Length: 197
Length: 147
Image (cartoon, rainbow over all chains, first blue to last red; front, side):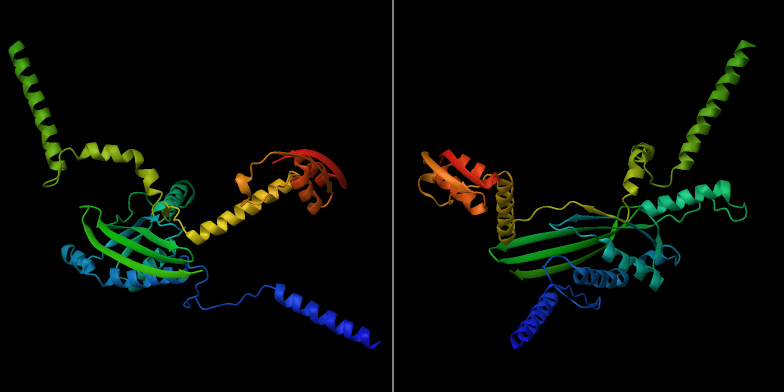
């Protein structure tokens, strides 16, 4: 009888331990918190790139120069493409969107839509030509033309030996005057990581 | 009469030509390259496909050599190969550090049991066929030519 009790308790304890060890734990964390798991590019790197590049692009004097040359008009920017030439899959949209958001929030720079979204807008406009009321129909040929295009690249250097690794990322963004091809601003964010396995 | 017609035609042609030249000159902005239309025509072709990439990230990544990652990859690959060999009913337990590069032909009689360990022994000592048949049936006896 006593032996049976001990056996039951032991079985419960073992099964409890097994369940606890096998169950997956998920915890919500702050997006500002830096959690490095594998050493690869992660949300903290994206956030750091966004913070630094946003501060740089909005603080540079290309905005005031443009306004002086164009009777106080705000510059209009379109986002071009970013080339990821690093060793990892990195989607630049995570930090480019933060920069775009800062343009809108600070009201210093006007932003126009590009790429597939612009195609979608034009398709919608086309649809309105035959389906919308004449008074609400939007016309072609009245879009805002961008003054500048924002382009970028991501590069990396990996130096690894045995269980040690140093990874260096360099994110570059460039703002170019579409009319003159003149580069009016270049921003960069450098991140270096030491990873030991 | 004929002379008058020639003069009128000449005047008309002259005015038409001067009108074209004038129109071209007014279309050009100060310092604008007069051959700008050549470039415009060239880029009109590929503009749509290029512009559709706006706002996207073009993935042009490279594979960086990482000693540790390569080691893990080798292990994973070896496990995969061993698994494939086991699935094919053949598994060679000969260690990779064997003498003479593991290339010493031998003829031997062998036996093997149907479990994985028996299959292994059948391979090593009884040769390839011993392992093969032993691996697939419950009890196997093999005569093989192994190296």
